[in-house]
Structures are given as C-alpha cells and as structure tokens.
Image (tube, rainbow, N blue to C red; front, side):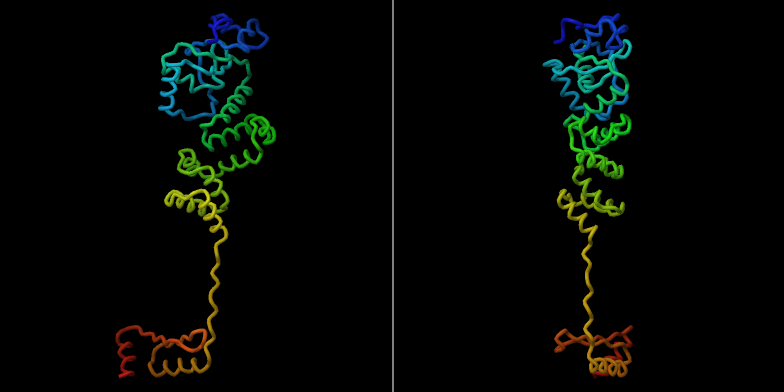
Length: 288
C-alpha cells in the first residue's frame, strides 16, 4: 500500500521539504507514503486524552492480520512527523511490531494543525459528551471560531453545539460521571435546569442511588423547581356553646381541654392534656 512515488522517504527529503513550495513537496501532498514509526511523534495538543488498552490491543491484532487499512495523517516538522489524526493506529502499529505505517503528509502551520486535529476528533463515534464539549470549547477559544463558523465547519446545528457546551457548567464530579458512563448527557442536561448547586447535587445522588432514567430525572428536576404547595386546611370555627364547654371542663379538671368538631357539626372529640401521672389521676378521679 502506498508503494511507488515517494513510498519510502529519503533522509534528504525528510530534511528539505517543509512547505508546499519546496522541491519534492509534490511527492508528499496527495500521496500515501510509508513513514518510519521512529520518525513519528504524537501531537501535544491532541484532544483525545484516553486510549483504552484492550481496544488498542484488539486493533494491534487486526493490524497484524490485515495491516493498517486507513493511513494516518501527519504534519511534516523538520525531519520528523507530527500526528494530525490516527494516534490510535500509530500506537497499535507499534504494539503490532510494525516498522513503518502508511501516511498522508500535510504541510500545515500550528493553528491549522490544531484545527484539523480538533475537527477530526469531533467526528469520532467513540467520544464521550464531555470530550466533545471540550473540543468545541477549544475550537472557539484557541482557534477563534464563532459558534456559527463552528456549526458550518463540523456540520452540527448551533443548538447542538450550545447544548454540548452547557455540560461544561456541571461540576467535575458530574462531568466525570458522564465520561465514565454512570449517567448520560441527557441526565446532565436535566441537572442543568436546576439553578441551585445543592439541588443539582441532591438530584445527582438520586440518579445514582435510584437508577433514574432521563425522563424520571427531568420530572424530578421539574418537581424541585416547582414544588407542590400544600394549602393548610382552614380550621372550622368552633360554635360558642362548644367553646363554653371547653372552658367549663378546663375549670373543673384543671387541665387544658380542646374540643374538636367534624365539619358537619354532628360529631367530635374532646382532648384532655396531662403532664404527668398525677394530673392523669386527677382527671380520672372526676369520673369515679
């Protein structure tokens, strides 16, 4: 794969070709060439920060069997090559024991390198929602894109980008829970509907403890924002003859007395308070 014109880079071409106008640049641009793994180094600004070891070993086994099917993309940097995209394939190729890897060579500056790496990273299907949001943030802050530019560049609706960026307002514990798969981005967005940090934290604990679905989380958030107010039942006014009975009993028994009457006024109950056994015996003595 990639053999022929510019297939194996010579020491001279590695050192002399650094821009599209240099002699021999046409051997790089638009062609697939084999590059020594020892001449390749990772991009320090690589957006991807986690590489699953098992997945790398599985890919390495596939490379042993079938080779590197999709070339990596590199930037020419002196006599070395910096990875634009394909660091997983680069790492797996080293595990597989390869000496070279097929590559597309790009002649780009630092900002173009970062933009290409970030945009390429967003297109990956295995990224978690927080990693995508962080990538959007870097494109906005480090490349200076507007959300409108970013929307066109990555082919996503502005609302999708805005909702993604909002996840970065969650506290680190909740962001890590999204990254680890304990909760989903949908859970995160439901948490963000709550303004109070204490309410977010309470609902987050409930999600984990009760295994709430996104729909259940949205309902719980709505209840926290708009709690149902219980209206105290109006106390039924006590007719005068019952009030008089309360006073008379209290005078006779020498304790607090409360007469409660049902709404229909046909039945009720008498409550006698006593503080100790002596007061109780005094009440009972009046009924002997």
